[in-house]
Length: 414
Image 1 (cartoon, rainbow, N blue to C red):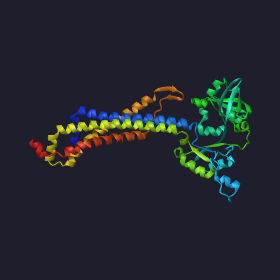
Image 2 (cartoon, helix red, strand yellow):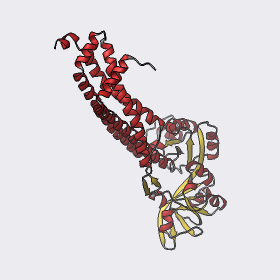
Image 3 (cartoon, rainbow, N blue to C red):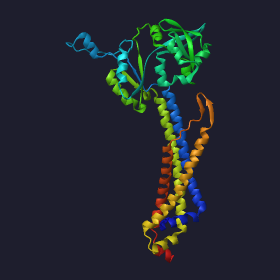
Image 4 (tube, helix red, strand yellow):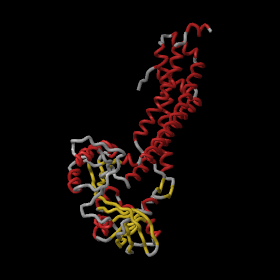
């Protein structure tokens, strides 16, 4: 295949200084491999953190929030013939129930963006076994619906979710709570609410999420159990958990659901702002490191091309004297820079994958993290290759323009 004369000259300059070419290409290789590895590590960590959040948090939580007293409420009581003002408004007492939760759930199921729903009622309780007591939270749920949303079955150490759905007086407890109260599958645990109501429930399952705040305090039971502990009727539901197709769009979907139902819809981003802030910080750190490395690699290419121009100044003058235009000279050195960038980019992509794969086999063995979380996404390799080529282009452009302005008459005269 025939290649242009400019490419041939660029290749000749490239191989005439092999050591400098290798050093420049290694700079690009190192920059891109670090780009690949840092993105794989940060993305893997972020995905793990996000999965952990979404395994315990619904995309949207629908609930009846407390309301402040307002003029509208007073107008209904005192009438509109007087001007009704409220000073120092207070929260309006209420049980925060969702009115007719089955109708609300049915309405939400008609939405195309909703993938799963689960009604829930919870209570702060005291767990006890003999004389040992622990504080915690009991959640009355339809366990099979909750499992669709949070994959609770994957955390079960003993027993099964089906046992809870088949046993009206059953409970599934966290591994930390089971250890603190010395409980095993089949044992009974006493649950006492703040109002004094209590129930004795059989442990039919033990789960372990490796998150101590959950494993030490959280339990699941059937909805009627919590309603009885709170001394409420069978229609008493305080929360509806909602999962949607595009969970990144949960805030906008939540606002739409608020307008539809009149209840407060809290997106998972609102309840996990601290974790999301940590994700942004990690992204900024990774991008800063990678950009710095690529800039350093770019300076390496720039310095090498400057040296080539200095050493080949007479040859450049001869080229221009024989009819080469400034644009041709620019093309020669841009091609040389791009060849360096291409070699470095290909090696960097391969080396970046190798580092990422090697690190992904690093055993951690803490909590539910077996190996270091590493993400392999094609877009990172495409971005890395493009960034490497772009760095090489801009690093070669300034020396190329400098070479194109050489005056052949002055150089040949000496």
